[in-house]
Amino acid sequence: VWRLWGENSTLQVVDEILEGTCDENEILRCIHIGLLCIQHDAPSRPKMSKVVAMLENSSVILLSILPPAPPIWNITSISGGPQTSSTISGTGSEH
Image (spheres, one colour):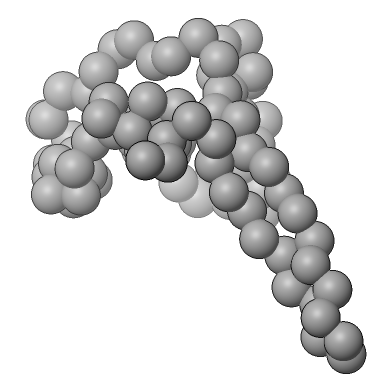
């Protein structure tokens, strides 16, 4: 999504079933908000109250500049007998 956002092709991630049923500007706004929420630098992420305000009110102005690179995630698979689980952990934001 980050790459597509930078290429101005973000709508390519939207399921074809939704084509023509949703406002493209609303979809782009939701994706934009999602990208703001996963910024690598945790203090730069909006607080949940701000996220709710951005989703509820289209007149709330979103930050126009997003970080240049996506966050880095480590995905680890853990096998514990008959059950298998996966954990996802971000890097750089743990304290």
